[in-house]
Amino acid sequence: MNPVLQHWLLNLAVDFAVPLKFLPPVLDGDDREPHALNVKSLRGISLCEGVAHLVELAENGLIAFTRVGGLETLAPPTVLPLLKNPAAEREISFELTDDGGRAWERASGPRWHDMADGSAVVISEVAQLYEWKWTWFSQDREQLMAVLGWYPMLQNEQIDLTTVKWELHAEYQVKYWKRLSNVHVVSFRSCSHSESMPAWRRGVEPEWFTDWRNSRDNWYRKPWNMEGWPPVR
Image 1 (tube, rainbow, N blue to C red):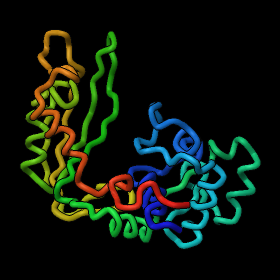
Image 2: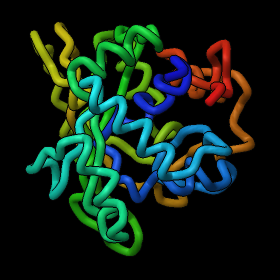
Image 3: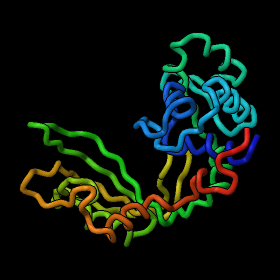
Image 4: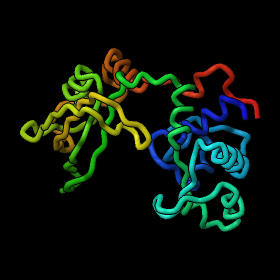
């Protein structure tokens, strides 16, 4: 398989197990349309071709197919026949294995120390104003401090400073397939901005801030920034 194509397919599943139902807009669709995978579409490859490539990756031990919330692992040869059932796209997902994660790292050259990421759950919603419980993490303490300092501008939310809890973990899971050592982890509650709370709107924020915000996503090499994109089939 073309190494850039392989990296693109692995890159789809870096953050979460990907249901096959998410693939048609990416493989056969239009990358100008919003969809669950924030990647460049690979025009010219059909869903069946894409799944066939994924089966090859699974046979090489780089991804695993699962069903029913990851509780059942599927043998690679069984996936293509299952696609004859339209409901299978909603039931089957693929995710990186440990070997797949290492293959992704070799191609993308991630600078893990530069990554700052987070996740949230909704606690409450009143009159379209949401309260969130956030957990953010990074090996870089200063970068995490910068994220918190500019949080109203980054997320359009206000942090409840009385809820901030900061810890240093000797080991921490930063991706579902990756753990790092010496990771700073901060948790807090936040709420949506009210009209009275200041924040730059997208399109009117200073250029220097836009550059910094965009640079936060550049801690690894994207497939479409590699020599040989788009890949030859």
